[in-house]
Length: 543
Ligand SMILES: [Zn+2]
Ligand SMILES: [Zn+2]
Image (cartoon, rainbow, N blue to C red; front, top):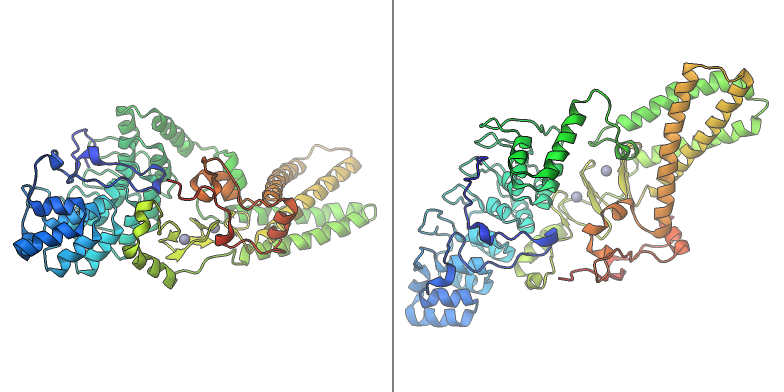
């Protein structure tokens, strides 16, 4: 894509509707993609009948004029199948197939789109499924080199894009400018879709023929969420120049996207700074990426610093005075290591991958008439794990697996916190909290014995202590509050993304909260969590 404003969209820009919230389907487009006048000219009766979406008039015309009418072209060079696909008229499409009408002929115009491209514009999965079953190529390019997957991404059709990838569409295809599906999703600012594409294997660093990466294109469009999403990906450089020497920041400045300009400048400062990034979020939840750093930091601090200090310094001096405390301290330590080992090694609740129900759901989509009512049968699918996600499950980007009752990915235990290890996780944070309090008490006790000497090793020890104590208290406290209210960390932070956490008016509502006692029993696995069907939903699928 060229960075200039002269960029021409393959289809008319006015018809691009981005789905609000990502879940609702945009209204179907009735005019032909690329046609300015649309329905202004009256076409032959067969085309009018198909546009109306009713099968009977189509059957009548074919009976009167013969099946040849299904191979005719309208005044713009489109076939009847194009219009059936654009409108999502599955019955008419099946009728055309039964009567051997063409279903994969390109339009006689510059763009040369096939019917499958038109189906992709409006995200008609059912139509696409019928076409593929009838032998139409999933990767057919139009004259600009756009595959149906690319077209789906141009129009923000996340579910259809997931369907295409599930059916094995080739990801490496690009249009004639070298732009792939991810470039287009970034250019259009469809951040939800971008996430799906990146999870599915798209490279966020790929350059097109103008040397532009998806980040350049997101900066042109001005969607801050898309820009952040890309900057958070491992190895994405933020100051690459394109063929015209423009960096993403320069493109954003040229278009006066102030929020993006501020974000990129801040990001650049962090990246070039020699000081470590001080980010409260990163301290608590660890730096981005699946790194063992925080876990190793904890192990090294405790094993190479804390324990030697305790064994060689603290024990000999205070063993007789503080004997009961030492016994309790050691017991707590044992519990800490056991709970850390369990939380780190146990399966936190990974959902099974490649389950047949996933394929079934994909296949059923073709016969799913509820699309029009806003019920989205693909909403609960994870296309990376190829599995069905129950409520409260989430795909962890570090583990690259879906986790049942996902809480958060904890870098200190180097594992997700989920259904199977949340108790040991809480025990671990409690043990760290207690150990910290003990250690502080021992340190102060010894320093008092020595008359409060000024020693750097004591100071480092104290700083480390305060750090771990602060993190442990915060995480333990948050975990207990969440358990008492029966909400996960993920739900607390991202509740706006989940329909089941909304009441009819879109406000936060927690269907799992049944009182503190009940909630804690459920947290401790003393009570079975409700099945998805039993959860009282207020806001789901309110369109
Ligand atoms: Zn997943
Ligand atoms: Zn994880």
